[in-house]
Image (cartoon, rainbow, N blue to C red; front, side, top):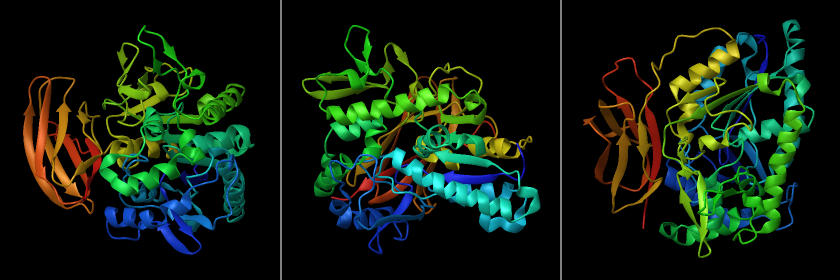
Length: 454
């Protein structure tokens, strides 16, 4: 890779601030996660999209302004996400040409409600203008291309731009962190389960808005994931008795079909792609439709493939075996991959194309299962296991601003260990689990969660 390429960072769903007619409706400016959600709650009905929006944008005064740097979450829509500040800082430090730091890297905020096809068209204009500025600012940049660094749904946007909007000739690399290359069961549960009871009226308003977002439908799994009880798996798009709207299901399947057909016709696509995925975390992979409701399972057929807690390993690039050595695997959760030291070392090594000292030590072989939201009066529980055998672990609960709420050390001997705290005050938190037997390990598994007020 050339050391003068332009880096463009694309966040995942919910990772960009939204302003509507000059007022913040989704932003990291409030001081707490719950204050941010409360601000969104005042405007959530206004964000609902027309039923026929398709691959266009409404003229409703909503614009995306910047990436969210801190912990953020819309419960009932997607996973809690640690912000993008750490990723951006690492990328800025890795840029070889420092005197033009305001031009590289560049950040691409977008309205994450809208179709990924529409957003990719916006990316085309944004990326090509940014590359032109970067090439013009110094003679050594005249042959520069683009390296995309994408988290979650951001990878789908970059893929569509590269393969369907003419971006391939000027793209050198596409690095993805936790991107659901073939969708995620999480989106099916969001759309089909209805409002989360714990969220009350906010949950009802949010669900009405969420089912109108084309982006959420385009996160539906495109791989065969619906169980029939006889060992056979059906594609979601082929179901005749699904509780989801048929046209939206079929369009989501068409989105992936068009994307994969274009990528398969591009011989340079495999070498351009660098996929970093979360591993070893309990992750739903399939669903069964029982009495009109989907019941979810961590098994795909007879296999527990695990994943990052949100995106199953089944959702890797099409045609790539799960043990393929082109995939980088990090034992961490979906919402923390872009902040994980080991993952950032991988990103930096791809960007710079030189070996870097692995600051995070060996990849952890730890697995953490826990809900993403708790009621204020209930204890916080997590099931922690070590697939490779007994080990001592350090468990730390932190508030959303990093303060330590609780720190303990436990020994996992056989099977799984259940960790439990007393009830916590409403707010955003993270649960960090690390091995204490390996002094070099600083990565671990990080699970963000909310404690919801009544």
